[in-house]
Image (cartoon, rainbow, N blue to C red; front, side, top):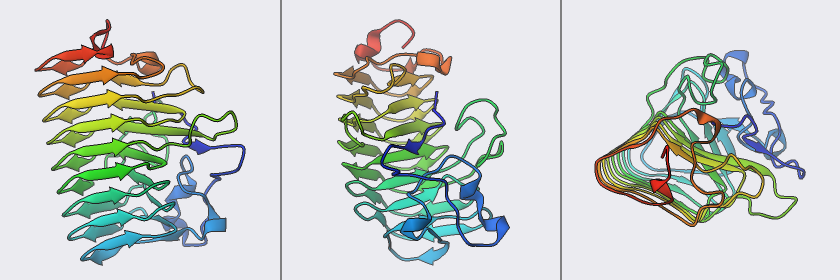
Length: 261
């Protein structure tokens, strides 16, 4: 289950957002912190763009629309917080650079019970990506209730495994992905792939947490091809999600042959 500690750490990597905007637009203050906070100059973003590169700390306010006709890029070390009741529509691909953070979408089950807690307040957004999401050594992604026309690829990244590393989550939950989902080599606090519908393969391998024995939850997914899991520590598990075994039309391979998975 998604932990409430989305991005927290002894070095104050993340703090509660306190943004000087109208109250109706200040929804990031209501839920778990995503970006680094006001010291980084968190500012709202919405509107229409041909291509868009996010630099610094940005969020999509509730009730607004961010539409990118072609490609959206999250620059190195930057953050886009769309874990809000705003709407994001990307016609092309999304690229998440090293040390960057992407949070996209809201559903009632994003954080687990109670299902009406902020920032989603029991609601589901309709964020869409026409192409694929590519993440290379990203700090994390929070993908929740999105419709993705291509695939999701994430290689490396996370805050690392040092004793003083911040606790960071990597949830991929309640999405519809027409292609493949590959989460490979992420090192952080908690990661999970839960309640997704995937048109291709799911490959979840070499992901490591030394902070959370409940990490690496891969359950309740519907997968049209294969589910492949190798080298995860802890091993892929049901955890405290209360999830059901994955519905896999192809084969379950590696750690994902365990009971309940």
